[in-house]
Length: 52
Image 1: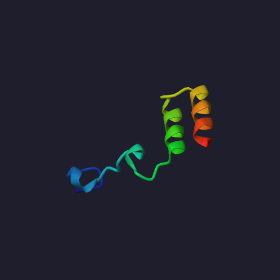
Image 2: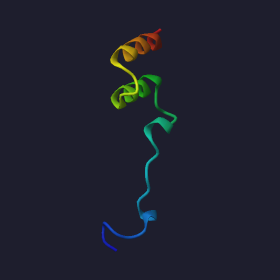
Image 3: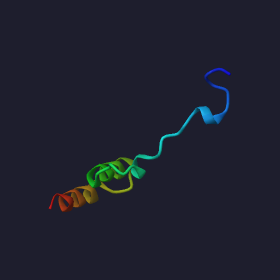
């Protein structure tokens, strides 16, 4: 079939970034900030704690 039809097995989904083993805690924190899961204040506090 064309590009928009066919079986879903032709289109493999990538796992979420969070499930990847090579994501650093800081990268994960940035993702959580972008998703709105943490406030900027929580981000800054956690970022400082990770730096220690």
